[in-house]
Structure formats: structure tokens, C-alpha cells
Length: 372
Image (cartoon, rainbow, N blue to C red; front, side):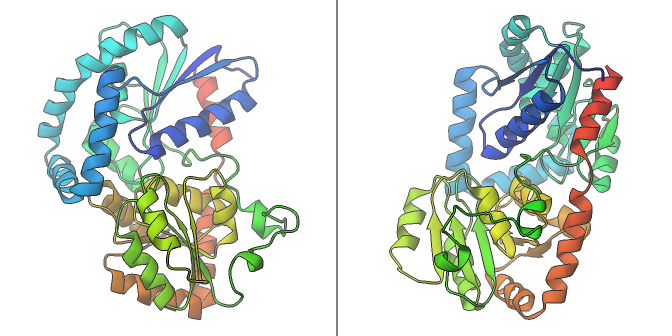
């Protein structure tokens, strides 16, 4: 099997989703191409200082003024020429930061999961400074103009509708590819009857018996109306496992309740286990958690999704029949209660998720290697 010799996988720590996708791709590449040198680089969004600024700004805005972020996202989404102006404005700084990285690693394949970084690659490609094949991996179910750079060789999306939008926005070669998730997110775990928890432990020991269990998450930063959403889940008669991520204040508040129907976790690497042990995955964030839940075969609810990419992801996956969008807290309570009362509805969503996740990402990577 043909394989690249040197692969560079680029992302940026502006939210965990971009980095998680890059790590998942790198893990799969190393297994598929054992002779290749696969390197991950996370801080190339215009250099370390700019990366740190973007990361800090994203956290502050999403926690303090998410509506402002959503407004900018929506306005630029409706006005691609304006988005293109800002793309051109920022690409030179990113390209300057990328030059030493590319010289150090001399890749023959570059895969990028962060749109700002892709802009630097696109500029270098257009100027003839980068000979490697370049692939932009869209980690959101919906495509925003900021994701699209016509000078990269390939753009990967996870939905047909997103691919159509990417082509309309000028992407050169668009492929519909399964989302890049860690191989640990697989339906074969729980659904084959394999125990997911440590020896001697069980989900029954963690939560009372009876009812369904809903995994509640707001992404790595634990943003969105997680407390209100958790209350809605409990009101609907379900148990809740809340992933508070790095939001320590939220974790402490929920822990202080002492509710036996509620488990609260901070930052953890056991998300595949928790997800597979749940009956439903509920997220207020963007597309990465939803992609992981679909890979495990769990019904996905978007609960009061965060403005911008969260709402866009909810619409895209709901339109594709892969998720249920709950715009309000009251919608969350109604939908959780309906899923608890109707196993057939859960089975429908489960089957849709399994069909979606049955596509083979490793086969797509093998085909990419063949294209050189």
C-alpha cells in the first residue's frame, strides 16, 4: 500500500474539537502508514502569541458574550465576500508562522483541522511555496465561509449538504468523509456486550436503576446553559451524567447538590466510556461531541445550542436526520421525556447513527495516500 513519507497534521487549541480531530487523524495515520513520520503541531494560528490570544478570546467570548460570537458567525456566513476579505487579511500572518514549521518537517502531505491555519497553507500553496498535498478537514457539520480556501487540494466535509455548500463557496475538490474521531468511539463497545467500566464497577453502581441516562456536555469549556439543561433532564425523569470539562465552577455547583440522580465529572479522558454507557448524548456545544456520539451510535440532542457554530451544527444534523434540535430548555424536557417513554424513537436515532458511523475513515485515508 502506498503511503506518504512525512505527514504534518495541523490544528490549534481554540476549543478542543479541532485538536481532537487532529489527534484522531494522526492516530489512524500511524496505524495505517507505519513507515511514515506523522507529526502533530497545534500552535500555528499565526504564531504562539496569536494562538494564545485567539484561545483566550474564544473562551472569554463564549462564556461572557456568546451572542456576540454568534452574530459575527451569522453575519459573515451570510456575506461570503466580507468573510473572504477577513480571510485575506489574516492569511499572511499565518503563512509567516507556518514557513519555519514546514521547513522543519518537509511534509509531502499536510492535513489541517483549523480554518485559520488552513488559510496560511492556502496562501503558501497559491504562491508556489508549498509542494505537499494539502487537505482541509471541516470538523463542524455545517460549512462556514471561513472553512473554505480554494487553493488547498481537498476539502473534507461530513455531510452531503455541507459538501454542496463548500462547492458553492469555491472549494476545489470536495469529499464527503466520515468525521475524524478517536478509534475508541465505536458502537462495538457497549452494543457487543463488552463491559465498558473497570472490573468490579458498573453503571448501576454509579446511578440508581430505572429510567434512561443522559450524558450532558458543553464541550471542553463546559459552556452553554448546562445547569438549566441538567435540570430539564432531571425533571423529565432521566438520570444525568454531566461533563463539566474545564468549567470548575460549574462542577462544584452541581456537585454541591448531592442529587443521587446526578453524576458530575470535570476534565476526563473517559468520555468514550461515559458516552457508550449512556442512552442519549445531549450537547450545548458544536459538532465534535455530536460526531463522537454518532460514532458510538447514540441518539444526539442539541440543547439550547451555543450561538454560531453550535446552532449551525444542530440545524445541519437535524436536517440530516441524525440529531434532534431543542432550542429551549422546555424543548429539552419534552424530548428527553419522549425518548424515555418511546424506545422505538431511540432505536430510530440509534440506527441512523449506526448507518452514519458505518462509513470507513481508514479507507478514505488509504485513498488519500493513493492520490499522492
